[in-house]
Image 1 (cartoon, helix red, strand yellow):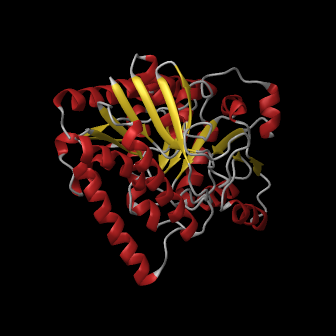
Image 2 (cartoon, rainbow, N blue to C red):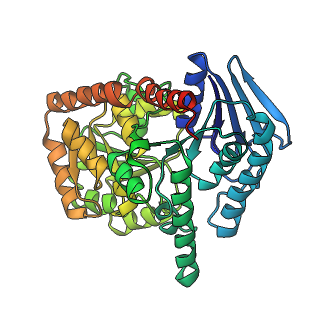
Length: 411
């Protein structure tokens, strides 16, 4: 099958979902044609070694990657981010007319919603069916971020994006979503229930896997022989890491909290930890992806922390898949599907989001669990990943959706 693959985010950017899926489909014998842009996320600058030009192609075997120019921007500027999204919509649509002219189906990775433009054009010109892979609920993910303007302008943006998403849902022949509650939201907003399938995300399995506990990794975490909880990932507005810092400060005599990563809220988090006098909280900054599995193994638990927002209740954050793949027990301060998944599979502890008192209680509970109990939680986590979240399982489902839409000719 000839598969068009439209995504604004693609390796060498940290875009393992799109990158791993494209490679896996090509390995299964499909002709996969990726249409993307030049790597510039998360810094907003084109990566070293890349130069923007119109007809940039690469790849091998059944995988071809064409990159089109874009206005690079990933800062807090609304104008910059909107221009970034719209520029990809324009250049990818122009390229798609020839590059994707004879594909059997088009896969679209969302967000941003503007990535749908190239696929919509192929649908209009050649009735090519589209499989939309929804990773984030818009407009919530935009209006709750620093990108969204305030006041009446913000209300107009919200209504415009909501209408745009309804159009995308109607235009797709099939829709993959990453959590059960997200499926309910998509259907509530106009998608045909028969088109929607829950496909749990996978992680980069070359990086995230069970590894032995190394003393060098324990030293890197500052492990001092007591319960160590690690938060890995973006420290931004959706994580509300303040909750974890206040909780950890409450149990400073029993639990260490180590934050690995960076983001727009990092400086505030550091100031808060200092103001609270919490010497059990350490900030490691960004670490190379190749180091992460060893750090996961050296910690006792992985922490998932999210704000209490409707759009976030219908998501399973990528750090949860990474923890499961590494066989790590988890502590989840979140609502909705992330918490329900952990509770139903019995792989860790949960509490309501944005509740420092409840999270402190979970930290204290985690500290007294026996090593044998922690090992069993980790074993189950790895088992759940292989059975429900792995690349193989996810690619099976996406491949089935693409095949059915292409065979049936549903545009």
